[in-house]
Length: 139
Image 1 (tube, rainbow, N blue to C red):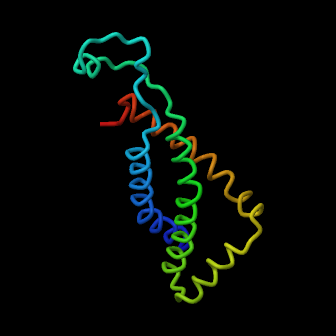
Image 2: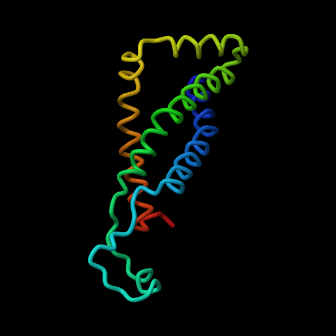
Image 3: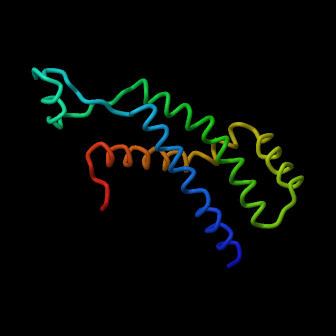
């Protein structure tokens, strides 16, 4: 039961940080843009009134993916080890030792362990992006 409480506590601390990270990525590199092809509107205000279709921005999506899978993954891994270690009462030296151990693993082993979470993260990110662009947010 204590392990579950530690994990839940870490999740409560970590989730807002990840939400801010994902929001920053989307605000800085929007994943979609209005598809104005074929639109013959005379003023900007008319364009703003038309919801129109959204077109994926390949460049921004690639940038977000690269940043999230490099800097984001590195930060989250270190934060997870440090956060859980701190909540379990480990001293700083032990936490640093664990972080070094994770980063010394073979790259393929690390990616195999992260594959499921990466796939889930991509699906969740896509859903969040669609939810945001189509105004499906809950009240």
